[in-house]
Image (cartoon, helix red, strand yellow):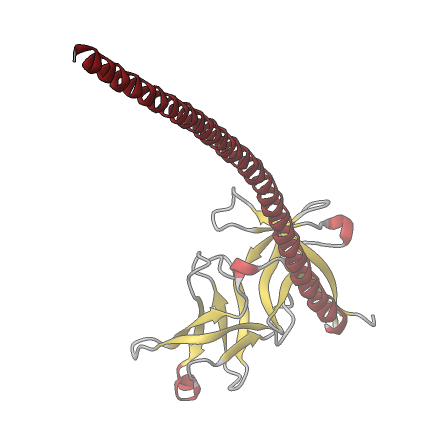
Length: 281
């Protein structure tokens, strides 16, 4: 009885041992396979990550290089545009200068008196009322007391007279100087008077010693021209327009204020003329 039990137990033990071996064998193969798969997955993931990081760094380097190139191109284009704008300004200035010179040339051809075209190159700092300095003198035929006229906006206008003639430069006393006096008349009514300055470029000229009976014939905007009396200034050159009428019953004459026909702040080119000599002399 004991032998049978022993044999049965041994058989069961052998069976269990065999089953355990089988289970151990299969479980070991699955573990190894899973380990290999996990290692392969980790390796592939790491390689993909490194590849992506390398691609990102390459893209960033390329982008930085492109930005640097774009900055250089932008700076070059900006500099080129600045040069083009400067050329455009210079061309515009040259065109304006040529137009002004053409106007002056046309005027020089049409004026009946002998004239010397000159350019204003400055103002005399020692002169209390800023005499104008022109770029021609006795060497070019300029002499003292010669009248100076300008051509602006299609109109000839009186500027003043030469008060000092050097060899290559001269000084001109403008109409707004209080020492300047010009025999003048109204272009329409022909009443006469004397025009003088008040010492400032921004102050109106004053025409004095006008007969009081002219009051009813004067209007704002009336043109005043040189009369030619005194032998210095040629006749019928524009001086200004009436901007204010000054009348007092107690005075024996009346006065008017004039807006100058010439804009002294924009003077560049003027003409020194000999009012006693015509071109055909």
